[in-house]
Structure formats: structure tokens, C-alpha cells
Picture (cartoon, rainbow, N blue to C red):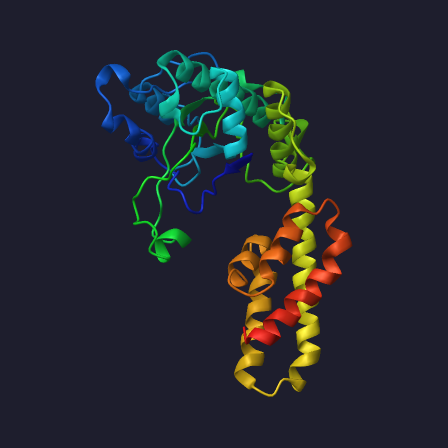
Length: 334
């Protein structure tokens, strides 16, 4: 399960949400009017795109011209999680939503909508302001298609073209949520970093800030409870977070080791490339993904990455992997 709150630095969310709502209508362009998917909120699954846009745009309260008016949240179940929902909706192991009957597809989508409502409950509660999903102005859209982007590895390798549809189960949910609560009095920013800090607002002491890690963990727990999903240890967020931090620390250790060993490397270019590779690992947003990309075609790297992905105790193998990374990089001229 990957739940992401998209940064306002990237998205144009200081004005109308019209462009985003229109973007979320893209799958409807291929459907006739009667079969087009509607938006949904906390209480309804039959919201038009016009109502969704106007409701968000008109809920800005006293927000200034240059203040963020809304945020987008994407809810991205893994293929295993989607397969699990598909089995519950149809009683069969499906590989694509096209294998579902109309009734089964409705069950499948309704299950994701109900889960999204629980996510938005968790979102509201995470502000520590006594709010629930009912306090929010938001609209969600279930989508079943993803496309290969120009920067994807498969496109660069010539396996697919940019714009080609991805195969298999690709269902995900986009949510557009207003910055203001439904009373238009409370500003809600999930990008605030002051976790559980207190401030005086309107003469009252209130907690401020949004704990994104806690939010993601609560979303994972809600999914597992709602769908009776037995999540393995290596697929839990806590495990991933530990791995990510361990990889970052390991990469830093690699840099320190390289810094000591560079003088004994005869070829300057070789040493420089090794250092640059290690520095990229340290600065990468996700060191594990960066490591996978760098050593994808390096002998021995496949086993190294597999060990990292599936180890129950990442700290136990960290030192060995760090040595493997350094040795492989030096030997292959990276």
C-alpha cells in the first residue's frame, strides 16, 4: 500500500482545481455517458465533476490569493492487495478488471471507495483537531489504468512506448481535498512538519502539524483490518521504513569507506565514478531504488538486492551488503 500526499510545490493548487478535476476525467473520455465513472465523497458515490470542482473552489474561506487551496492524495494498492480485493469481490483470482462482471466490478470499486473513506477519516484525525471525514470537503475518483511515462525504465529499454497502457491490475484512487474544513474556519495542511506542536489559535491552545508517517501506518492498518489482509513482515511499512533508513546509513558508510580507499585506486576516473555513485545513494529519496538501478546489471547485485528486499532483520545484513556494494563498484569500474 502506497499512500501519497502530493507536494504543493509541484502541483498548481493555489487557484481553481478545474485542471485537476478535468485531468481525473480522462478515463471517461473512452466511455459513453451512461457508463462514465462519477466522483465520490464521504456520503455519496454519485457526484458530478462540476459539483466536485465547484465545491472545492467555493470552500476557500478566507484563504489568500497565493495560499494553497487544495491537495491531492493518491491511494495506490499493490498488485497483491488489488488481487486480494478482486478475490473478495468475485470469488476468483483475477489478473485484470476486464475479467470482472458489471456486478463484480461495482463490488470491487465500492470496496475501494469505502476504504478511501476510512483513509480520509484517518487523514482528518491526524490533524488532532477533533475532526473526522465528515469534517472534510473532498472528492475521490477510482481509476483502473496507468501508462508508461517517458522516464520509465521499460521505455528507455525500448520494451514499451511512452503512453502505452500498463498490463495487469492497476487500480488506484485519486482524492482532491480542500485546504479548509467544511466550516471554512480551520486551515488543514498535511505538509506541515511541526508534529504534535501546540499553538494559540483564537485564544485557545490547539495541536498543530501532521504526522505523515503515522498517517501512512494508519492507512495500512485500516486496509488490513477492512479487507482481512494478512500482510507479511517484509511488506509492512515499518519494515520498509527501517530498510530505507538502514540503506541510507549503509550508503553513508560506503562513502566513508571509499573516501579512505580512493588513494589506492590507480585510475582517477574509476575512483571519481565510484564516489559519485555512492553520493547519489546517500542523497537519493529512496536509496533502495537507487541501489537497484545502479547495480541492476552488475554481477552478484541481483542476490544483494533480493537479500535487502526480503530480509526480516535488515540491520543483520547491512554490513555485509555495504561491503558487497563497495567491492562490486570498485571491481566493475562504476
